[in-house]
Image (cartoon, rainbow, N blue to C red; front, side):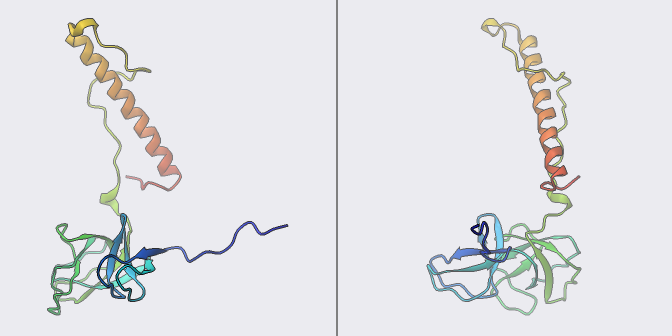
Length: 184
């Protein structure tokens, strides 16, 4: 009987093609929507490994960090040591999201621990609330002939929105049960 599965690579490590400039090991980069840290120096255009999981200790700016805070990479920022080579920050105007703070770090702390790509409570996609005062209908229905009965048309749209809300919430419940979406 032939082998059905073969080890490829550790989870949390993806192939990464360096852009038009050289990359330095220990610096964060973005691949799609995943933040990662280069494991080795890469020349422009070279393919290497980007680690997209784990807890990393990043140089940070002077902001105070609370465990669970969203942490972003600011390549133009200055860290607490005065190095202008970038740093982790709690501000959303930075380059991209890194993950969640693993522990608190004061304004004078030079580093903070970050769980890469870790979603938190404020990343939860909340259920949709039906505010249309309509009743869920099996179908959207049809608009009035010639568009002359606006009250009837509004009711059709309300019923359609109510149905959509119910269907979206059912999908979210299934995703939560499967562990794909965090609970509110």
